[in-house]
Image (cartoon, rainbow, N blue to C red; front, side):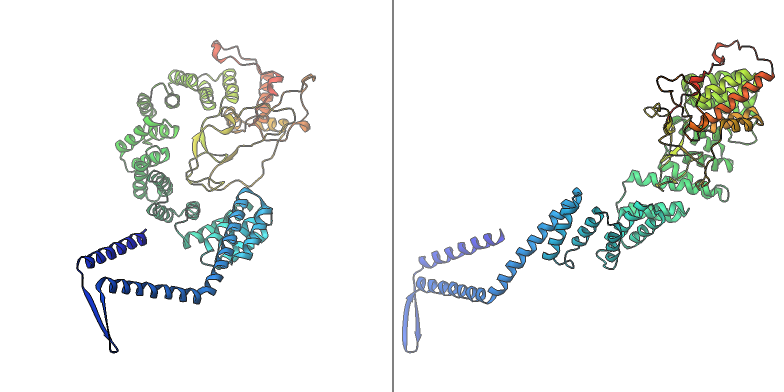
Amino acid sequence: MIRIFFFIIVVFALGLGFAWLADRPGDMVITFNGFQYEVTLMVAAVAVVALVAAAMILWWLLKSLWMSPYLVSRYFRVRRRDRGYQALSTGMLAAGAGDAGTARRMNKQAGKLISADQEPLLHLLEAQALLLEGNHDKARDKFETMLDDPELRPLGLHGLYLEAQRLGHKEVARHYAIEASRDAPQLIWAANAALEDKAEAGEWDEALKLLERQRSAGQLAKGDADRRRAVLLTAKANEMLDRDPLAAKNAALEANRLAPGLTPAAVTAARALFRQDDLRRGSRILETAWKGDPHPEIAEAYVNARPSDSTQDRLARARKLQKLRANNAESALAVARAARDAGDFKLARDEAEAAIRLRPSEGAYLLRADIEEAETGDQGRVRSWLQRAMRAPRDPAWSADGTVSDRWLPFSPITGRLDAFEWQQPLEQRPGHLIEAEEGAVPQQQQTVWQGPALPSAEIAVEEPSVAADKMNGMSRSEQAGQTVSAERPVPTEPPDGEDGEEEKPADRPVVVTRAVEEEAVRRHDTAMDEASPKPPTPDDPGVEEEAVTEEQSRRFRLF
């Protein structure tokens, strides 16, 4: 475009020049070698322009003849390169589509037409073709050779990182990710892996520095960066709460400011303030968090703000908390627990039953059983509530990647993912996850109960109902309830059509650790107690009558 514009300007200038000479006629006399030449100015100007044009054309012809060998070779070289890039493009598309044969063929064709030293994509295409063919050993060797080239080093580290993840070598994958983050901090996958590694090691300050570097590089949005920083600060505050309450308070307060919806941050900040006798500020933080999301940990921290408070003072604080969120199951449970500890069994019973009406759950029925045992000691009523607790939905818990923890953790112990734990109902009790298994089926998923930073490595022993019943005989009622509640959900089956529903033999049952074993143990123990002692009278309250459990119902179970 610029050349065309320049050419138009030159032509326009020549036209103006010739027009100017035409309006001013004159002669030009040239004397050379005894001869005198006389021409008009117009003819002289045309001759000069023609000579210049002829010189330019002659120079172009000579240059073209001189450069013709190079031009011809460059034409064939460009044509060869274009064919190579076409083969490379076809091979990359085939590798993305999973066509191993075409990818391998195009890789060989592109390697003949393009030099691998000039085009790094050839190394990537070869590695992808090896992976598609299932030759992972040679693919890893290819990625390792890329580490010697500074341009290909990030690509090789990423390939080795993915291979280590595929093989389940978590530590090896983290090693490659950390190496990549040192060479190229802008790589998001490497920065995230390095951040998770620092979090698992408990190096919270280093993790915060990495997070700030990600935020400065624009790799994270402001909301995501604030949430991750709040998680790291909360974890740091929990760790420093005992040895440095002031630093824990500052970290927790900043976390609560960055993520007001993060319950552990609010609870940690309040506990740090309570340790410094700042009851008003800590209570205000918990009240604000309670209004947004009623959580049992908030209620526990709020009610037990001062260890020196009497049970009546704690009941008053629970009632105050209930006013902030009326008609809520967690509010009712908080008041019921405080009333039980204070000895106000009527209030405790009313609030527990209100919580059951609002949201039936295992914890609510167990609390109702505890109240009944503390108030009347009626074992019939207690067993009735315990049986209902066995069949009630599980209480929400901190869950991440199929793992349930008794406390919040900043990262998943399975994948190492930051901010993975969520307060939710366990997977086996969610709507859409309850299905009935055929006889002899094995549960497709077992929920792992994980407590603390280290995963349990010992295998769980499977006990027969008779052995579990013998162990139950030596336990008190509260211990039996605890054992029953902590067990896994039962997984029974319906008897196939045409059978009389006879009880299965232990050897024919699916070998799983389920709550059915504990249920059977409690049932046998209760039967022995009923035979040894007079049967208690039927409760007057129809809402607490014992429910008959038939043999067929005892064999039904849920698969989760």
